[in-house]
Amino acid sequence: MLNEENIKKLREELIKSLKQYQSKEKIKLNISGDILDRLIFDYYKSEDEKRIAFDFNLIKKLDLTDALFDKVNVQNIDFTGSKGVKINPQKVYGRSLKKTKLTNVEIIGSLDGVDVRHTDFTGSKGTKITPQKVYAKSLYSTKLADVEIKGLESLEIIDDKEYMEVAEEIRRILKPNNR
Image 1: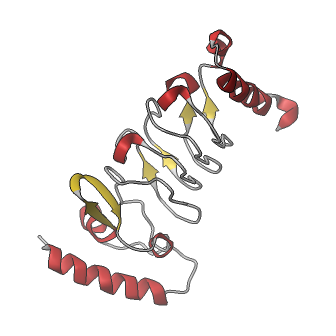
Image 2: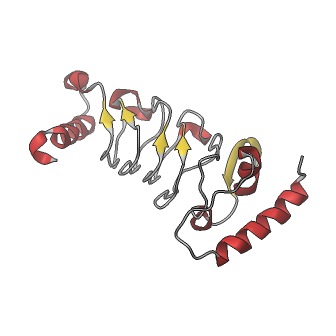
């Protein structure tokens, strides 16, 4: 098993190689998902939170099919241009996708209890949201293109003005003449 010193050396070599790589084709590294995770993610303060270890624009040059985003703080990350990213929102750090742009990302778990405020789901795959079950029942500033909305039939009973405004916006999106 590779020790941390060797991982750091390999990471530096990977960064150097990615900076020089000019093709638009994604690089598929023939290494285990565990080693890939150790190269592109670092633990931050505790074993409960991982962060991106270096410039994510460089990481996006890789095919990330084998990368696990469990425990990774994905807030504020723009996945546009990435390949193979699969995220289980229940397993990311803090169950938060806040301020994340999920283009090209496959959502493989429930969004129940997940913070999706300011999140852009445009271009995501497999995304299903029940507005009443997300964190704080808030879709504030959330872009819901390419999202399957569930549970809309019960929105009329909610007595929250902001929530109802969002629900109306969702209904507008779902009307056939607005697509």
